[in-house]
Image (tube, rainbow, N blue to C red; front, side):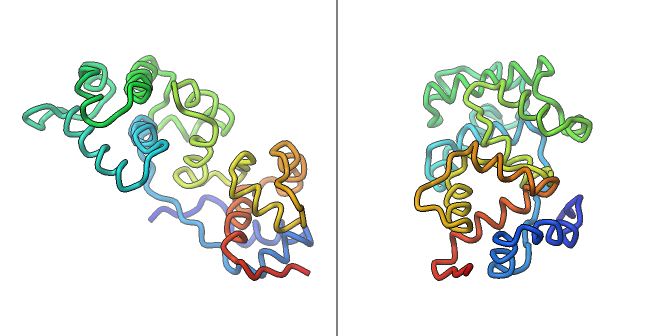
Length: 216
């Protein structure tokens, strides 16, 4: 399993200077975020397109069918932008994709071939904002999807997905809000967490799992 490219100890020490967040860190316990093996963005986004707005079980089944469809009758074709481009739209639809997802998958293939969607080796040379800009150019791919990739696949330390419902709930819990704060408010406050906003995000997600949380 890949190691995080930043120091957990330094991140916790920095975030603990925020008294309220520091109490949440103590209550939640050790930081246990792990990152997976990084796929090529093409593969990761293809899977994301399939999994959007569908239960995990159904999406897993559909993803398998889509891969089989792309590989062809003999199962010998690789899953690449080229084979996705050549795969007939009606066959992808029959595999279980909506027409909107078929369009998104075709756009992903087109933009990957055009070099807009970077390869895996190119990612390390790009900033977070550059990755967001290039990947959200794909039809159906929003900022939240790319932010999840940045945190959980690339291990980028300073990502704050402020539109995420779990983040908004966690922030409201930690800072005593009666209503969910606006994303812009979270982003403004979260400037003090730089350069470890990904770690702060992980803790905001975790506090929502603690129904008896008392930060007084």
